Length: 425
Image 1: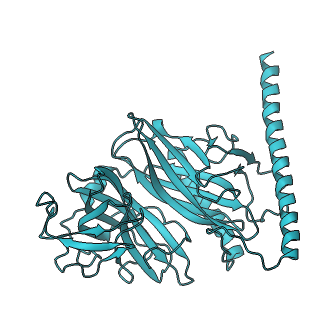
Image 2: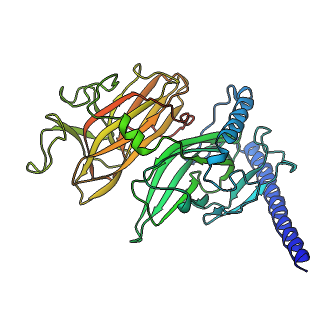
Image 3: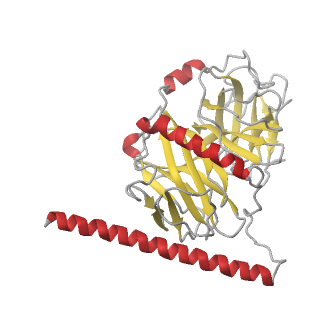
């Protein structure tokens, strides 16, 4: 009897997934036909979504095989330490949860709909019926992460929507604490399309162990379906103490940051969407430099991405790993603790942009803390800017010292191009 019940349950699961896939393919087919009909009648009409733009199709087909090979290499080299369970959806959506939306898995042997690019093949999850940008697919990783360790993330994603659509797909960590407070930690994001699989990459670390940690993918506008082929989250053998021993705020050897201690005022530094100010003290002498005579702060921040930045074009080399160490704290707006992130903005020769999450730290208004991270560039960019961001508007970022130097060990490759509204340029 138990064998019959198990067989019946397996059949029911298969039937539900097959029906979901059939309905999805039919809805996409009808939408595709309807869109084509409308476009013939109104050739001048354009979409109104801000994040949509025509993707670059140069060298798309030529790079597909190398990207798939890279995905296989990532999976083979990291599968033993991957903390994501059912990472390639071979078990359907088991252990995964669509967040306020619907999802199902397209099996690798399935007949693919005509509208789907031949480059988006293989087994993958489809997250559909999304009504908010933050809706996506999540997995609880609480019992598989620990404080003090650095984790590397690699996810292969795509989208399905209007013809020619491009949308950001973002990897995020939801961190819940015992007091019911919730923080969201940005990991990395990429510009995804309907033409090929794109890779989301980044790193994260936890300074303390929260009550619950959830990894999820989000980002596209409502109505755009999120496609996910695989997710890998690994913890390298190098632990946090190793990282701290290699990075030092007193180490100017090979530091590519100019005027790192603000001995030359604010030369080489600028505000990213805000002003920056030089200080020898703040708050009636309660805030003093951690080292040296001066530090800098932001002023009039109105967006989370506002911060302090320096262009490092020409001083950073491709295929060479770098590590950063910065002394930071926050001030103002009655905020006593906030996440401060180091981010890399990269512009390629074709004007495509990358936003690479380097590292983050929970900063306070009480004392200076060290922000650490690593990055590596695969391409040959035309412009590279490193900057600090993160706190809520009205809260200023304070920076005392910034070191960026060659790393002893290479981190994972940086995320691919991410296109969004220019900020501070």
